[in-house]
Length: 218
Image (cartoon, rainbow, N blue to C red; front, side, top):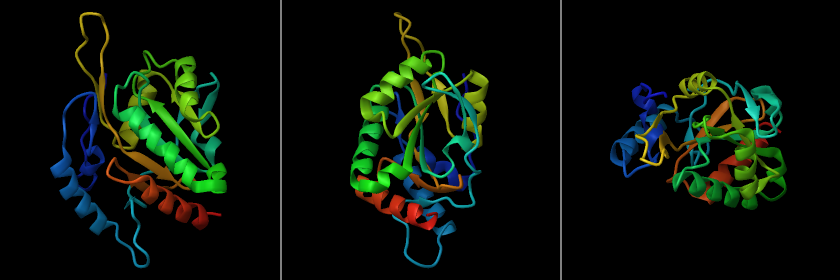
């Protein structure tokens, strides 16, 4: 399984919270976030989320969707896309994040039709398309899609977006948790990386900036 990947100094804040244990990088993350905000500042109305325009590559992948069919980043062109890396056995952060994104969808009103949430598994050994379909469907079958792939595909994609994850020690019964970063990546309708949301960002803040992204690319 992958280990924690190496990050540039302005990208360390992507790990503000780690799922699967009581680990926290909160103080270091906040300091790094301030640096990133300065580095990404632009004139005009400030973003409430972290602006990562020009700092991450476009949405590009080849995975398997929760219906068992191949899917690529191009499949979601024309929609604002929220990408989250998690896993279905996650005990806390993943369901909390998905529940928060459901609040965001509710706040968007008709604009929600222009948004898709991609839940990309960092535990492909257990997260079959069927398991992902049931998981995301329990939150929002209309707007959320579960994606999985081979270990190599997930590792490559995680490296592309500076996502850290690591399988923890197995319990005697064979169960295990996967420690992973918890940021939500926002891509516009053209597939360009635009914003980053962390667990510090409220549903109101996320919905506010999503409307701006949707309007910018309408």
